[in-house]
Length: 166
Image (cartoon, rainbow, N blue to C red; front, side, top):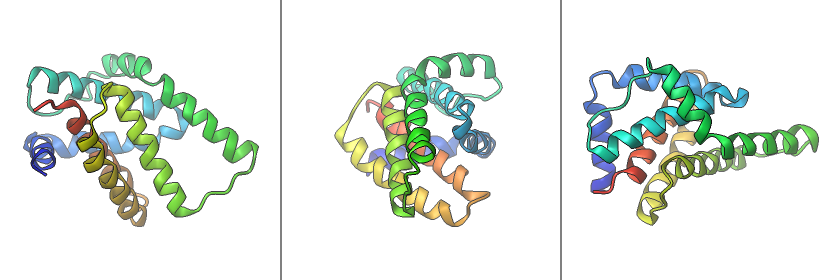
């Protein structure tokens, strides 16, 4: 639990945490169009680099060219998964329940984080996957504003858990 509280404290100690989460939430809404996952993965990649060298705080979104470039390289698996989902949902008319949708989003984001961080840690998975499920479940009720922000915050926490080696 100490790892989890450290992840939250690092995020909220950043003076611009709300603006960074707000922009990340906006990109989260753009995931179905592909550009969202590219930008989020670029941001997560920069966050991982900061964690590895021991820097505090989150990266800035204003480095959008670097974020986009890094995100494009980190997003191959995620973009492939999005295409598979489109084929299943729109091509085969697969219907999914709300609990199934919540679990699918949480699993997708966890796989995405692992592919960006390139590290699997059982404790981090046990802490972060339920956190994403709760964030997606609670955020679902605030569909327009809270949902993308809360889920992006959970993704940031998850990334910090996987990337932090302390």
